Length: 426
Ligand code: AMP
Ligand code: GLY
Image 1 (tube, helix red, strand yellow):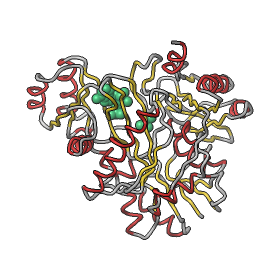
Image 2 (tube, helix red, strand yellow):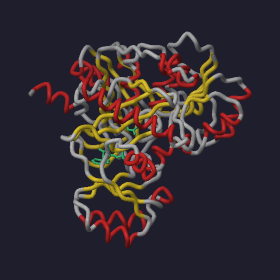
Image 3 (cartoon, rainbow, N blue to C red):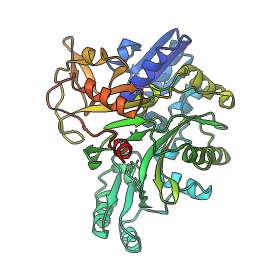
């Protein structure tokens, strides 16, 4: 089969790395790809925003399946476009992708179909919002309804914080049209986990749960980022909780979307908080998580192409995904200053030495090649993943690998997996 992966981050590198192990693939392309992906795939210079260009390429090269990594092209309707041209594509349609791209819609759906989540309300007018928010208990979350690259959820400790956010979003339009609707959501207290399911719109198979560390600073404080590290499995999700989440969150949502005439195909990502009242949804995403993908796919034994084919063929009911019973940890190395202003273009060294440790894979997130030298080219630069016999072993191995890699002003969190280590010490 000829396969095209769309995207250029660490998540897509992990897809390409895993797909390269499949004997069903005769030719692998990535668009636009990155230097890490170029080790396994031919990179073609088409951005993920160029939907027509991607469809033209898939048609011309007779691509059998195109796999969409990021949410932006899904929200822009890449699946609808490909399908209208008779091309097979892995990912949800634009209408189904609204589960991520419109938080107001997602919460309405969850409430309608009794998927456990927090109370919410949506505002478009600043005066109305401020009046109503007086009635809300704080802390709470205010979220721009549209896509905001992981930066659109604002923790409001006090009513003053809420007022400030209302002004930023509904008056100053800091988030552009993504902030046309502002969603207030009750605060969910507890530990977070990411659940990923492969679905064809009828059935869903969920794989090993992961935990992500979203903030820039150690101790899970500071500004939100795309994700600074992850590990899997996340022990907070016991087998009983997992069953419960699969039934009441993941299956229920797939059924709900089908009933609403928006059958969902691809990966459904449930962001869960385990509260004292059980698991509750903070959000859904219409794609895999980054950097959770790097950890999770390193534990998948089944050929990823078989899983993707089952989703595209509507045969997920017959799918049995075999998982490695060990653990994986991913540590993100970022440019100093990220998630705000940062410099790029610095030479990167030590990747080979890191991978020589064994069971270590260095995924590229923001890299480029200049004059034959690998250089930094983004906020999140590399995601270093290690597999170990248990979580602790995978964490130690990941940090051993990180220590081998260097570039100017690099930053990484030294506490990825701290919650699970603390629990082990209890
Ligand atoms: P989101 O962009 O919706 O994924 O939110 C980003 C982060 O904010 C999440 O990973 C959570 O840590 C936190 N968060 C979002 N919504 C809530 C909520 N309702 N209660 C508690 N934490 C939340
Ligand atoms: N790592 C969180 C996300 O991909 O949304």
